[in-house]
Length: 310
Image (cartoon, rainbow, N blue to C red; front, side):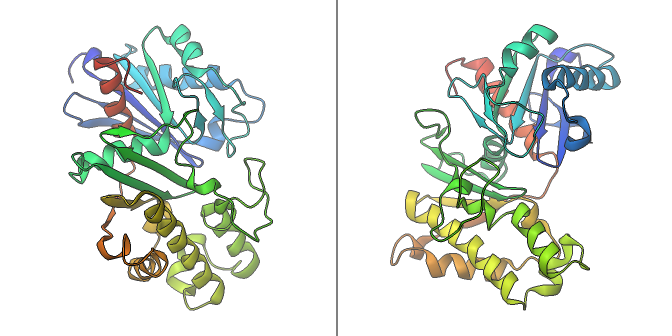
């Protein structure tokens, strides 16, 4: 292993797990580790202190206690446009609103710290991994604990005025009265997400492990409706952006027996005719726990080379 300055420490904080990895300038990953998010961010903990402890502990195990040249962290959160403050993290109660994590960690660690939405890091990885960095517009939709969404336009991740663009999971769904973890009523991810699938399991299939629902129960009306909802979500993105391609990923698509063909049929059914339906290009993220940390490092390298890149 080269000196610690050759690496970016990429961290992907998901609703279920945190993933750590050292990434070199060729985007090769080493020293991959995974920790439970819920076990790490216990109730009433100090999240900045806990993150600093995790990073120091990781570097102690893998870099002899030295620091990498930068740390880049993806949060399942809304992030301010300047990419310095975690605005809201609905699915991790210990992380407060308006959490100034960059200032806190840079003060504690003494190295550059970058943050972004975790899904933006997944898209940055997939753009390179699938060879679509030259496309004008690419959308990524990741069905996991919630619905992760990121859109690349003309070589940059779409930010929006406040930095919170591409929140597909929080589009309101007519007739849906469920309350979302974000505080709003009717968000799409209350009916189409891992959280929604947990509710379906508890209500309809309590004896079936959640990762077996697609394999065992796709003939049920409730699972067919769930898949239709996934197709409608993807079609909504296609109809809004008319992208060159849509990348699909996330833990739900990796479950045993997930019916990709049926999902694609649903997307085509709800996409506007004749376009964009006729030219839909659906691609799939390569299942890999390390995608997020590598994407995090790709973002850090862009920021280190050009501080105005957000």
